Amino acid sequence: MKNLKAILLIVLVSMSVNSYSQIGITGYSINALGVNTTQNKPLSCELKVFANRGEFNNTFGEFDVFYNFKPGQYHRFSLGAGFRAMPFNSNNTQTAITIPAAIEIYPLKDFKKISVLFELAPEFYENSTNLRSLWGLRYTFGE
Image (cartoon, rainbow, N blue to C red; front, side, top):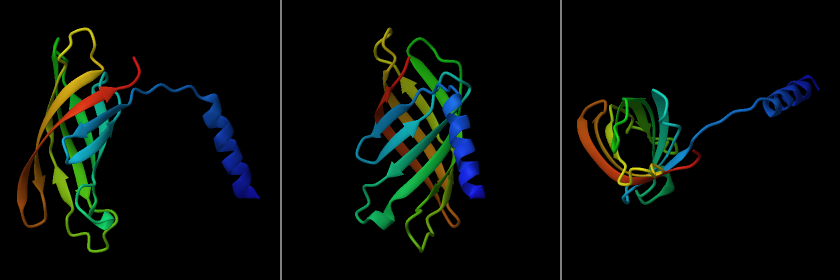
């Protein structure tokens, strides 16, 4: 009963708080799908899922935190740090630290909801290092 009251209180408080977030969806060619938070602030986050690896337990997940530099008229540069793992694999030996550098290009000056994204990221595994490149299209919801 005590837990039910706590849950009810959390639900009521969360319903009374207004929040605003700008979410973006990125398709990285055939490699990954990403969901990111607003990039209009200096810090943003992105969650990527690399689900093109056959079986479900071989799916990679990656969480990145980016510092967004001041945007130009047609571009934005971001530098981040992240963690990559196989959360559904019991033999999870593929964990890595990533340092992604991304440039987002807005092909239309007055419509910045659609952009082309290029990312280069060294991946530091326990016994090796890999250099990964991704390209994709991003659509940002909201204002």
